[in-house]
Image (cartoon, rainbow, N blue to C red):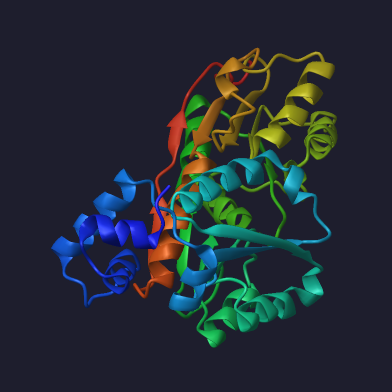
Length: 338
């Protein structure tokens, strides 16, 4: 593994020129920069991290502040997202600094990390509809990218998926099959994706002239136990749902268990559609009845957000991206029983 002096000697350039080329200084012409980068790869050059931080004034790290009250670290969705994020950042020699903070003091944690130079930017996860973190970081003019959206009126960088369109199409599919009593297991009421999916479902219902039924709509924690409990409750109603829309595969697992314990068949008696984040540990096509899903792999979100954040740290402008969502129809959806 070569050091800076060996790389400079190999190229016949000064160490200062090589350092500036590797750090993207505009004073180094493009041809020289390409030659230096190629030689660095050839000689397996790795920079001295402490020296690079002194030279650039950067921490070469990004921060994630987790809610201390939630078990997010064991959530398979967050694990897959983190896999995409860390792999992309590691290829650029950027570390992740992760900490936990109670919700009421999280803004102070963000400010402390920003003011002490521990990180160069933040990834904001689990955004709420009215999220004070976004406005505060905008006031600080500190780089960040949101995984999702919020109701902020000022421009900010985010990566989201078409939640509203995905759940509108899923609802339309069920309506086209003839379902009129459609249950919904959604996320926490103040989560932005919950708001978006709620809007998509309502839009599709209106287009088919179907009224909303509060007894068939639940918004809350996305756990298997919640899915089982609420699906069991819905199935005990005088007019139970003939179809269910689930905002996560974890909710869908609980809903399926409730359907089976009620002696009903998935697809035959109750149609099931779930959102699928393409989790590496949970393949919807391998379920006993392959699930109809709206799919947008969450690992790709981590990869894309890593690139957006490093661009922002490098001085490029605000970027926004809303990824399309696929609707994959399988055996868990069918016309309602007669």
